Length: 261
Length: 261
Image (cartoon, rainbow over all chains, first blue to last red; front, top):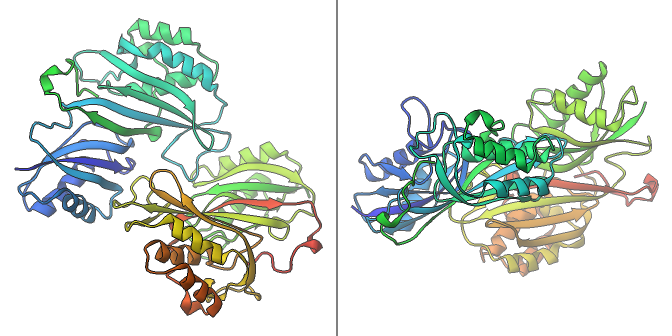
């Protein structure tokens, strides 16, 4: 069965999240239904990032095995035609080797968290940014973000429901910068993330931007390794899975804790 | 009664347009209801641009007379609080002289038309861009746009329902350029526009971008002064009223055909 790598964009609002669920709509189920309409048989999709309800993606990646070699462009266009009524699209589909695993071969996952920082709430961007009315200091937020970068036990910054065995992650990038049109953009990159990790960062960095916390408070929270030391978790609205990077290396050379985002 | 200049952002999708209507939701009615909740008496809003159903704004301007001098920030915040459930926000409110008329004093209206030009449909941007799957040539579109700039009889490019007496307008700016993330941006500026004028431009320029029309075809269509010579009208999704500019000059010095957009 030929394997396809799908790059996917979606608006997360109508869905309970990426992952298929019994009673609730999910992005995975939407795409699987489209693939079943194409192939006339059940198929299973494997995604790189299991985004939560309301979280968006502009560069989610998944793999899927199809019974025929349709050609990537045909797969992309056929799936999109079957998903016409859903805010989910296949940006590209390409045939890959059967050693490609969207989840376990992923080397870098990139996320963007968008804060709309102005007095007036979001209108055109409603549901797609986190509105924070109080002015935030981007510079001090970015300094506090530097405290979090690197390899740490991120117990403070993961959901109590996080199923990963190991709370240690290597955060390769965490930056805060001005975006366009009153936005502040938090960019995060790691091989994998813990559950709610970036939303926990965003909620905590907002406290820094407001002047209620310092970078030292963030350091103390990190070192506490205690979920109760975290700032409030930011809403899903501002979070986007923007890219997933792969290499051709075999899976066994990867670090020991992938896939627990 | 103190007069306020309101700068307004909205997602046009839930509304039949800017203008208040008997049986359908409108942006004007949403803001008037919020102002009535604030003032406990009926108020009327006057907008600079009567945007159609589904058309968005990031810089609509309106004026409103309120029975008390609340202060601009109070007006902005109170109206926004009353509109919490609607994708309509007041970006700013400032007290102005009673010779300020949002519609008739407007000297420049700026519009942006966003085309998403890629093979995959819109997902995150659904309803807020016009999706065109066939690759468009931005350079030839921009050359054709130059044909339309200037003072012309725009009968070809206005709706048959347009109520303006005079079909002549001076189009000060019409440019086509690459935007971010697979977008093509058409920017238009004039003192006033005819009904459906920019959507008629966008639909026609798309034909040029596809190679089906040349700049000479656009010139011939303009010179025909015949609505039937126009390309298809582009959907409202991609259209934004982005700014309205005013001067302090008295109304009588303005050119003779304002307000018919």
